[in-house]
Length: 273
Image 1: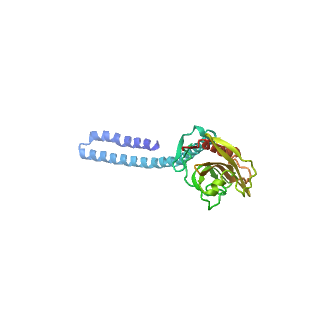
Image 2: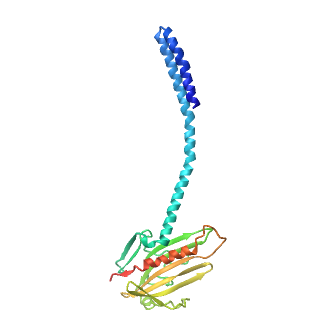
Image 3: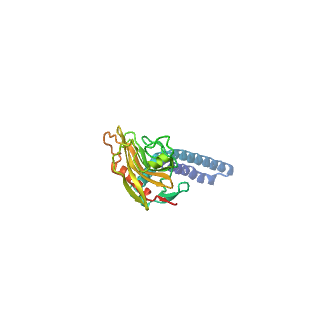
């Protein structure tokens, strides 16, 4: 503001004398020289004014940038929170896709946001065998896995957790003969119950395994179809180590909600022939 006032005063101080001088000067050359000097001084003043104002604009831009980054981070966190809440509470309202396996003749539906893997991944106490507890040299084959939720934390609860659906199959004589029962070395004493899914009767085998501050739990739904043993497994594995309570700890109720939601996918399983 002061620079603009200075510019105005300079113009007045130069132009007014020129008006009076112009009346007396007969030589137009001298008048043109005075006007040129005025234009030069005005141009210098404008340049100084621009240079003074530019740093202020840059400082304002630098101050605003961190705020923009914080806003983006907050928006991303909100999106993540919304996605987690949907998966926990409203899995049936998500967009679902149908997976068709023409090799093993079955279909299963799943939320599109989760995706499908055609292999099993070793994850802590979950190994990549075709069903939980199978020998590594078993002739069975992993068909697909759907990870509903997986998390790892350095300082909060749980240190790690995974809720996962796995489907595997085997047509070896040994696996077919033992398909509907617990393995001989199984530590589970649970009574074998049955579950009817889309008109198919499955045996429900409880999975319970634990180590120091770690666990694997779940249900293995078993059925023999077309001379093949199928194992559809609802699994969760995690660390139950707890340190000092932290506001960022994930409640067990939320973790169990992820695990429970797996059955909503299992119940869509069907053989197509």
